[in-house]
Structures are given as structure tokens and as C-alpha cells.
Amino acid sequence: MNHKELIASMAIKLNAPKSVVADLLDVTVATCTELLVDEKTIGFQSFGNFEVRKKEERLSVHPATQIRTLIPPKLVVSFKPSNILKDKLKDLPHNE
Image (cartoon, rainbow, N blue to C red):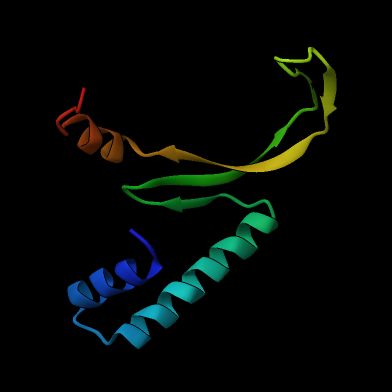
């Protein structure tokens, strides 16, 4: 689902104009981005938590050339799903 499809789906569920929903979604994303840049955790009840974690520097080896490269530390966003979301996903049929 892309941005436009998400807005259309939300507009139908909220019975609201797409322009209003688009503004609401943009503000939500901007607010979440600001909080993550400030390294704060964002929790959505029944969905999960987003948080910023630090990945330590590590040594990487290129498989073809065997050249070793030091990868510097960096900040990444991680997501931990709630138990409610995990349970809903667990009940879905598997495509094996």
C-alpha cells in the first residue's frame, strides 16, 4: 500500500475528505519523525513501539574479495510489535 492508497483507505473509514486525511497523515508522520530524531520512543497501543537504537561499529568481510571493511556505528529505527499484533498475524494463513 502506498501513500495515496493509505489516504484513500483512511478517508473511507473516517468518512472524511482525502485532503483532510492527507494533512492529518502528513502531520502524524512529521511528528513521529521529530520524536525519533530526538531519540524518543513512539508507542501505538495494540500496534507496537518504534525506537531509535545504536548499531555498534563492526567489521565486514566482502565475500568475493575477502577485503575487510570497518562499518562505523549508526542509529537505526527498530519496531517491536505488540502482543495483540503478533496474535493477529499468527492467525493468518501461511503461504508456504
